[in-house]
Amino acid sequence: MSCCNPKIIDKGEEKKESLDLVCPKCKDKGTKVQTITLQSLLKECCQSEVERDIPYKFCKNSECEVVYFSSKKGHFFTKDELRVKATLKDAGLDVNVCYCFGHTRQSVLDELKSTERPRLFLRDL
Image (tube, rainbow, N blue to C red; front, top):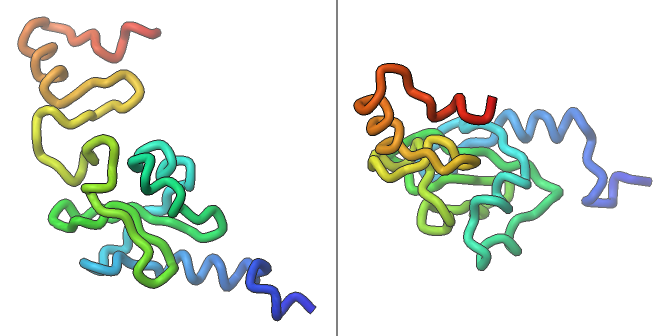
């Protein structure tokens, strides 16, 4: 019987657990994220703590220190554990608005000031 195997979860139960999941600090509902997101943005020392079999969410509350949290009690990651600053968690101009191309708020502002038609996001088209 599969009821005794903790790895086998009823899909309805998993979906409900994911929907009920809130930030352990501020109770924000958060937004579901894939495990690859955590593995890409967390510092190397924290990557081994990511569990592939549980859902994670991103806390959208800019005042909260928690960035990613899971259904496992006490299992979350804070701003200090990120390799890069989280756009919604930091108001600075040096924060990336595009991680892929390295555009920051400041670089976008600079482009807007220096040209009539910004080209930042058009160069690869």
